[in-house]
Amino acid sequence: MSKIESTTETREPRSADGIEALQAIDDFRGPVESSSHHGSNDHLALVYDSRDEQLQTAIPFVRQGLERCERCLYIVHEHDRAEIESAIERAGIDAEAALESGALTIETAENTYLRNGGFDPDEMLSLLSAEIAEAADAYEGFRVTGEMTWMLDARSRSRTSSSTKPGSIS
Image 1 (tube, helix red, strand yellow):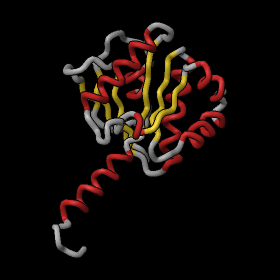
Image 2 (cartoon, helix red, strand yellow):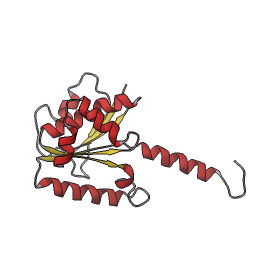
Image 3 (tube, one colour):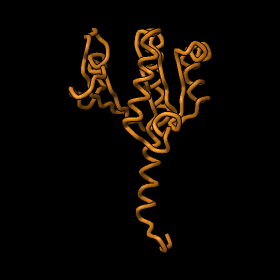
Protein backbone atom coordinates (compact mmCIF):
# COMPACT_ATOMS: atom_id res chain seq x y z
CA MET A 1 0.00 0.00 0.00
CA SER A 2 1.29 3.47 -0.77
CA LYS A 3 1.97 6.20 1.73
CA ILE A 4 1.84 9.89 0.92
CA GLU A 5 3.72 12.52 2.86
CA SER A 6 3.25 16.21 2.27
CA THR A 7 4.34 19.70 3.08
CA THR A 8 2.06 22.54 2.14
CA GLU A 9 1.60 26.27 2.24
CA THR A 10 -1.79 27.22 0.91
CA ARG A 11 -1.89 30.47 -1.04
CA GLU A 12 -5.50 30.26 -2.10
CA PRO A 13 -7.86 27.81 -0.41
CA ARG A 14 -9.91 25.57 -2.70
CA SER A 15 -12.65 23.30 -1.47
CA ALA A 16 -11.84 19.60 -1.76
CA ASP A 17 -8.58 20.35 -3.52
CA GLY A 18 -4.90 19.79 -2.82
CA ILE A 19 -4.21 18.79 0.77
CA GLU A 20 -7.88 19.03 1.78
CA ALA A 21 -8.79 16.47 -0.88
CA LEU A 22 -5.94 14.23 0.23
CA GLN A 23 -6.96 14.46 3.88
CA ALA A 24 -10.56 13.54 2.97
CA ILE A 25 -9.46 10.11 1.67
CA ASP A 26 -10.27 7.42 4.26
CA ASP A 27 -7.06 5.49 3.51
CA PHE A 28 -4.81 8.53 3.92
CA ARG A 29 -1.98 8.01 6.41
CA GLY A 30 0.93 10.22 7.21
CA PRO A 31 1.86 13.61 8.45
CA VAL A 32 0.75 16.80 6.78
CA GLU A 33 2.68 19.72 8.16
CA SER A 34 2.84 23.31 7.06
CA SER A 35 6.13 24.45 5.62
CA SER A 36 6.70 28.19 5.71
CA HIS A 37 10.20 28.12 4.21
CA HIS A 38 9.08 27.69 0.59
CA GLY A 39 6.28 28.96 -1.58
CA SER A 40 4.92 25.81 -3.19
CA ASN A 41 1.25 24.97 -2.95
CA ASP A 42 1.74 21.27 -2.36
CA HIS A 43 4.71 18.95 -2.29
CA LEU A 44 3.83 15.29 -2.07
CA ALA A 45 6.02 12.23 -1.84
CA LEU A 46 4.54 8.86 -2.75
CA VAL A 47 6.17 5.73 -1.41
CA TYR A 48 4.91 2.81 -3.47
CA ASP A 49 5.34 -0.94 -3.59
CA SER A 50 5.07 -1.50 -7.33
CA ARG A 51 5.37 0.36 -10.61
CA ASP A 52 1.64 -0.14 -11.19
CA GLU A 53 0.84 1.41 -7.83
CA GLN A 54 3.03 4.40 -8.68
CA LEU A 55 1.24 4.94 -11.99
CA GLN A 56 -2.16 4.64 -10.30
CA THR A 57 -1.31 7.88 -8.50
CA ALA A 58 0.91 9.72 -10.97
CA ILE A 59 -1.30 9.40 -14.06
CA PRO A 60 -4.49 10.77 -12.39
CA PHE A 61 -2.35 13.62 -11.03
CA VAL A 62 -1.28 14.46 -14.59
CA ARG A 63 -4.81 14.00 -15.95
CA GLN A 64 -6.21 16.40 -13.35
CA GLY A 65 -3.59 18.99 -14.30
CA LEU A 66 -4.38 18.72 -18.01
CA GLU A 67 -8.12 18.97 -17.30
CA ARG A 68 -7.46 22.17 -15.33
CA CYS A 69 -5.42 23.67 -18.20
CA GLU A 70 -2.19 23.36 -16.24
CA ARG A 71 1.16 22.60 -17.85
CA CYS A 72 2.43 19.21 -16.70
CA LEU A 73 5.99 17.92 -16.54
CA TYR A 74 6.60 14.21 -15.98
CA ILE A 75 10.19 13.26 -15.18
CA VAL A 76 10.95 9.61 -15.93
CA HIS A 77 13.66 7.37 -14.57
CA GLU A 78 12.33 3.94 -13.64
CA HIS A 79 9.84 4.06 -16.52
CA ASP A 80 10.72 5.24 -19.99
CA ARG A 81 8.92 7.84 -22.05
CA ALA A 82 6.99 5.25 -24.10
CA GLU A 83 5.68 3.53 -20.94
CA ILE A 84 4.38 6.82 -19.57
CA GLU A 85 2.80 7.83 -22.90
CA SER A 86 1.09 4.43 -23.03
CA ALA A 87 -0.17 4.72 -19.42
CA ILE A 88 -1.51 8.20 -20.18
CA GLU A 89 -3.30 6.92 -23.28
CA ARG A 90 -4.81 4.00 -21.30
CA ALA A 91 -6.18 6.61 -18.86
CA GLY A 92 -8.13 8.19 -21.71
CA ILE A 93 -5.82 11.14 -22.30
CA ASP A 94 -4.69 12.04 -25.82
CA ALA A 95 -0.98 11.99 -24.96
CA GLU A 96 0.12 12.90 -28.47
CA ALA A 97 -2.06 16.03 -28.54
CA ALA A 98 -0.96 17.04 -25.02
CA LEU A 99 2.70 16.59 -25.96
CA GLU A 100 2.34 18.45 -29.28
CA SER A 101 0.55 21.38 -27.64
CA GLY A 102 3.21 21.67 -24.93
CA ALA A 103 0.67 21.09 -22.16
CA LEU A 104 2.58 17.89 -21.31
CA THR A 105 6.31 17.38 -21.34
CA ILE A 106 8.03 14.10 -20.52
CA GLU A 107 11.69 14.49 -19.60
CA THR A 108 14.36 12.20 -18.20
CA ALA A 109 16.08 12.43 -14.83
CA GLU A 110 19.35 12.91 -16.75
CA ASN A 111 17.95 16.06 -18.41
CA THR A 112 16.47 17.45 -15.20
CA TYR A 113 17.64 16.27 -11.78
CA LEU A 114 21.04 15.15 -13.05
CA ARG A 115 21.52 17.57 -15.95
CA ASN A 116 25.00 18.63 -14.85
CA GLY A 117 26.24 15.14 -14.04
CA GLY A 118 24.86 15.03 -10.50
CA PHE A 119 22.04 16.42 -8.42
CA ASP A 120 22.33 20.09 -7.49
CA PRO A 121 19.27 21.44 -5.64
CA ASP A 122 19.93 25.01 -6.78
CA GLU A 123 20.15 23.91 -10.41
CA MET A 124 16.90 21.97 -10.09
CA LEU A 125 15.13 24.93 -8.50
CA SER A 126 16.43 27.12 -11.32
CA LEU A 127 15.09 24.69 -13.91
CA LEU A 128 11.69 24.52 -12.20
CA SER A 129 11.56 28.31 -11.86
CA ALA A 130 12.13 28.65 -15.60
CA GLU A 131 9.42 26.06 -16.31
CA ILE A 132 6.98 27.90 -14.03
CA ALA A 133 7.73 31.26 -15.68
CA GLU A 134 7.19 29.75 -19.13
CA ALA A 135 3.91 28.12 -18.07
CA ALA A 136 2.57 31.27 -16.40
CA ASP A 137 1.82 32.99 -19.71
CA ALA A 138 -0.27 30.25 -21.29
CA TYR A 139 -1.54 27.95 -18.53
CA GLU A 140 -3.58 28.14 -15.34
CA GLY A 141 -0.80 26.47 -13.35
CA PHE A 142 2.15 24.12 -13.43
CA ARG A 143 2.55 20.69 -11.91
CA VAL A 144 5.40 18.23 -11.97
CA THR A 145 5.74 14.61 -11.03
CA GLY A 146 9.15 13.03 -10.99
CA GLU A 147 10.47 9.55 -10.44
CA MET A 148 13.16 9.70 -7.78
CA THR A 149 14.48 6.16 -8.25
CA TRP A 150 17.75 7.64 -9.51
CA MET A 151 18.48 8.50 -5.86
CA LEU A 152 18.48 4.80 -5.00
CA ASP A 153 21.00 4.18 -7.80
CA ALA A 154 23.18 7.02 -6.47
CA ARG A 155 23.05 5.67 -2.91
CA SER A 156 23.95 2.21 -4.15
CA ARG A 157 26.94 3.55 -6.12
CA SER A 158 28.00 5.64 -3.13
CA ARG A 159 27.98 2.65 -0.78
CA THR A 160 29.91 0.53 -3.27
CA SER A 161 32.56 3.16 -3.91
CA SER A 162 32.99 4.05 -0.22
CA SER A 163 33.36 0.41 0.82
CA THR A 164 35.98 -0.37 -1.82
CA LYS A 165 39.47 0.82 -0.89
CA PRO A 166 42.18 1.29 -3.51
CA GLY A 167 44.08 -1.93 -3.97
CA SER A 168 41.44 -4.08 -2.29
CA ILE A 169 39.47 -6.82 -3.96
CA SER A 170 35.73 -6.76 -3.52
